[in-house]
Length: 210
Image (tube, rainbow, N blue to C red; front, side, top):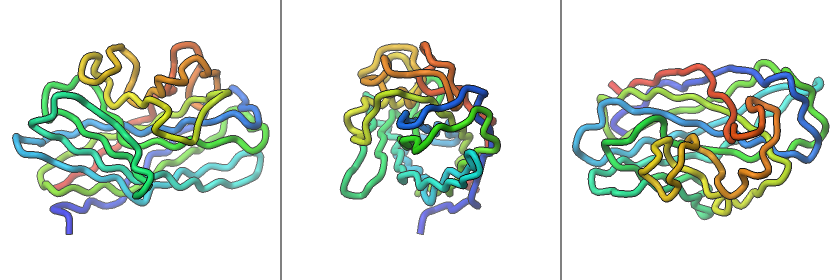
């Protein structure tokens, strides 16, 4: 049993007014900041995740892969990979010194028919747990649209943290940016295209591990 099992958490937000064309991909990402890490290794999990919304009268419930994020005092490079055996995101981060948010989980969803703009609400839910007590987790989600993408998550080149020097991606892109597919971003979901590779972040929800 993990040291802390907080209650499930959810965030409801909305898509912008740009319609999303059939066969384009919505790239959903969640990010967080964790307080109370200390000097020992800490692993935080995000499980039982779902994204729910209704588009043109059709309800959707999307299952998001689980995520395991390890903060390590010996890590010198932030990394994110997708474990195809366990079907979960695995991220390793230095325990201290990171600026901004860190990537938690992501889902690529190919739109089956033309979606109208302004879908509301869009709700992401899940349950955080950890092997360490005394944590406070502040999380958000975002979504951007791509006209070419991949369901091979290890081919995306996902940036693991906002920090512009902590990973192999030495830039100011947000955590969750699919670095290898940036040329294909277009407007829609919570993004405007251009250099908005993840879309705007939702409001923040907090989960505590007392």
